[in-house]
Image 1 (cartoon, rainbow over the protein chains, first blue to last red):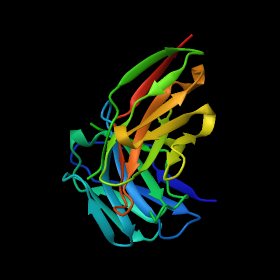
Image 2: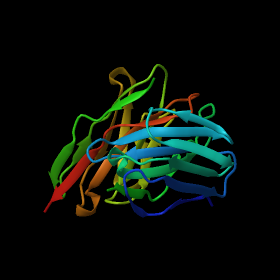
Image 3: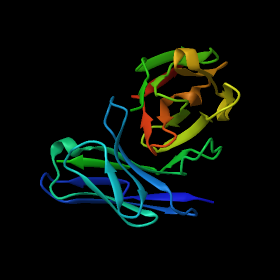
Length: 117
Length: 113
């Protein structure tokens, strides 16, 4: 069965420090991978998604970047954190959207609570 | 581009009462539609999804949702709410070819005894 791992679960970082959040998926190949940020009362904002190794699409210009060095690894990074980067970050993987594919859905990790101080 | 609107930020219902959470989407073709639930500090769990066929979809935990193309809606319902249903609920739309999954802002459900 497929599983998704996301770590760390919580993180407190000072302003201006770097960030690296990692997400890995097991039990599937060539998944779509997603990073979302959830701020209080603002729902889930899609930050990045990837359909393959080295292929990253950015949805929102910001202080963050993403990389996919391996098929089932997705990394969210920042060189210098801002206070506004605080939030709950969720990684997800999804099956490729094919023509009316009954298995289409997205699976989420448990999230990382990032507090920038 | 696809988008999702959940007009109710908070909803409070009594335990045992019926529930309906609203979701409206915008997408140029027939979309994939999802409802997810999130308990505090946790990831998201899929309740149900629609991709084609029967417009009334049954999900886990006694939830169902109805796809209405004419109204661009995908409302979530449950006939009798339990205290354990208190959580945040998200509607999402997925593009067939765009590989993106876009979420609404969420609805926080409170259940009073």
